[in-house]
Structures are given as structure tokens and as C-alpha cells.
Image 1: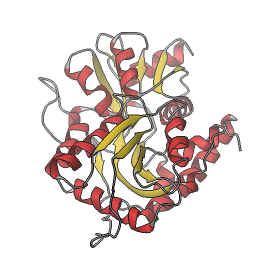
Image 2: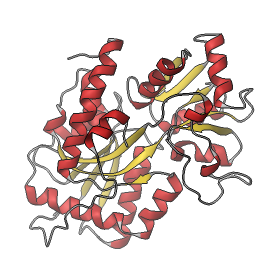
Image 3: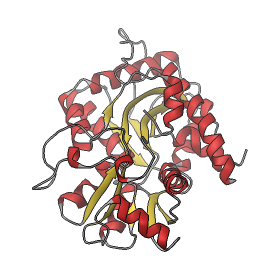
Amino acid sequence: MSLFPRAAAMLGLTLAATLPAAAQPAWKPTRPVEFIVTSGAGGGTDLFARTVQATITKHELVPTSIVVTNKGAGSGAEGFVYGRGAQGDAHKVIFGTNNAWLLPLVAKVAWKPLDLTPVTAMAFDEFLLWAKQDAPYQSAADLIAAAREEPGRLRMGGSQTRDTDQTLTLLVQKATGARFTYIPYRGGGEVGVQLAGGHIDSNTNNPSESVGGWRGGQVRPLCVFRREPLPPGPRVTETQSWSDIPTCASQGIPVEEFRMPRTVFLPPGVPAAAQAFWADVLRRVSETPEWQDYIQRTSQSAALLTPGQMRALMQTEEAAARELYGAEGWLVN
């Protein structure tokens, strides 16, 4: 269900979990709200935050205006540090992934995961292995075989350093014996552009970050890191839909599942009523046609975790990551 399958199994999350509706919360914004995106423009987190913003605005769920600010430097550390510094200010809403609790393991940053106030995780994003449309690799098995034959020659692009994309690359290498040269970029949108331009050989982008390149005939998905194929839906290209993509396990890559939560936090020290207000707003967003369309278009799994479930997810994933990263010498604390 998450970045680390074993951790998710321990947690036993229910993706359809519903946040308790807050009946007339006592807090509400009194000035413009800032949505802080912990990634560059065009990536999955950016699309997530802007979809929420547009839905809130259309349905008038918040009484003030909302501006989206991208602060993705340092693998998203810029955004979390900025949000951490806005202690007590519930007009700052932080959009991220599990980089909120994994990044402090591998980089010296000015926040601790439990400093932040969890609100919810609204979706779990799938990961796919992508190649250029005209690449000689007709399948994921072909790509892995080439990476085994010439270790380090093939370039695997990803969003950020020692983040989810590099973690998945590491898991693929450990599972298959292949070796890639990992090339980090500022966000998934940039990674998709780099693959379409032929500057890298493959990447591990989310569906939303490379769907344009797939639809335009520049890139193609080789496999999805999921226990079963994606559910049926409308065609993306003239001949294929997401459900036509084989699982990576069926292609000889024994990484059965790899997912990433789309998370929302508030700064430390905000009033409990503010946390309840934003939880209720995001619950209402999740019930709109616009959100359902977003989930379908981006091939994500819908979720709505409570703050308590968020904390449990943080703890189990952090424990699993410590084991994996420790073996690689990535840990800084």
C-alpha cells in the first residue's frame, strides 16, 4: 500500500478510510492561504496541490483566496523548512509525499517529522518503469538484461536524490542484479521531459508525470510496480490503456508493489480546530467529481487517512527505510 510493502502490511491501512467530519469547526482562514508544494512545477505533488486548490475554489470550500508556491529545492526540504518555520500558522498548508519523514533520515534538515501536524494522505501514487518510445528495449525484461550486461551504462532518471525514485531504483537493482547510473532531477515533470528528449534511458515516474509523453508517442511504460495490473479505464493512446501495462513482477523484476502517499501537513503548533477544519475541507474535496476525475486520470488509488493513521504510516515506513538505507550507508542519524 505504500513505499515499503512490508511496512504497509504491518500497518494494515484501509485506503477507503474516512476522516471524521468536523461539525462546524471553530477555526477558519481569515486571510489568504498558501499551499506550499515540496517539489518543482509540473511534478505529481504540484498537480496534486493545484487540483485541490482548483476544487476548493470552484466549490467555495474556503472563504479566502489560495496561492500555490513551489519550494522544491533540496529534494523538498525547502518547503518543509518553510512550513516548519510558520509555527502556529494554519494559513500555510504543506503538500508532499513520504519525503516528510524519509528525507530527515538521509539529509541534515531543520525539521523532524513529528514537528509537523498531519492532516491526511489523499491518494497513493503508483510507480511505473518507463523508456523512450524508440528505445531498443521492448520490455522491462529487455531493459534489465541490458543493465546487467553493461553495469552503469544505462541512465535511470528520477526526482531528487535519495528520495522515492532512487529508493525504487535501489530496490530494482537489489532484486535483479542490474546496475544503473542514477541521474536526479528537480521533479517528476523534468524527469519526463529528459526521457522524452533521450537524455536518459529510463525512469520510474508516476503515471501523471509521463502520461503526456506516452500520449504523444515520445515515451512508453514498460511495467507497473503493482501486484496486479491497473484497473480498466479509457484508452490513453489509440491502442492502450493503463490496464494494458504488465506488472513488473511478471517481467522478472521481483518488486511486487511500490506506492507513495500524497500527504498534507500543517505547521507545528496549530490549533486543533484548524487541523479539523482542513481535514473536513479535504474530505469534501475527495467527494467531488473533480477529485474523482483527477484520481482516474492520474491512475492513483484513492485514500483519506486520519491524522492517527498518518502517524502510524510515518512510523512503520521510517522503520523499514532505516533498515534499507542503513545497508547503503545513506543514514545521517
